[in-house]
Length: 211
Image (tube, rainbow, N blue to C red; front, side, top):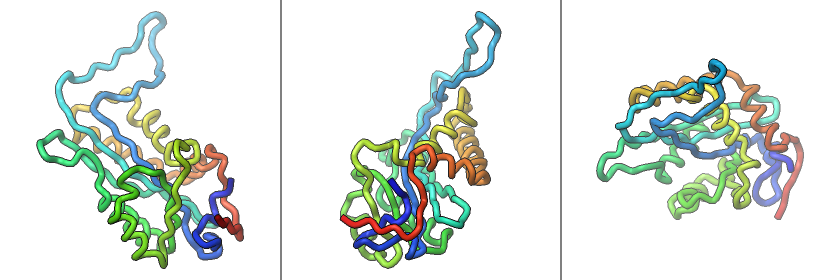
């Protein structure tokens, strides 16, 4: 399967100068992801975490690719502190704002590739996509196909890196660590490229895919 050249009506995304942007979400609470580490023989390392505390940091990210350009990682955070009436995760307007930010930063048309999450399919998002069809094309991934989304690799890098075995003191500490980890990935585009390679997808030019 080829990542470039995916566009509506048989147009070539590469010919249109579009960025191919994959989107996905992940979340992290105060309980750390466990990862392998070193320890004395016969003594299992123990990570002490606080018993109290609630809340969660959600991340929506775009891994953006274009032949001849440095790969980009663009993200947005949503913090849920467990307060009454507070939204637990992203709304469709948060995704809209993320896409608008990407369009401004990338400076070109976007082919957005994402899954069938219900907030991706609400009428407001469909109207937004239709109103910006001059620079935005939306492609839905097949159902249950995380292996085709390179952003899954970004989450793996994050949870095996700065978040591994982290005993965060509170949400503010967790937010700082997540931002630091994502910034490290942003400054290393070869890591973003590697996440695309893991999917088996490749960037090509001049390819038309029609339904």
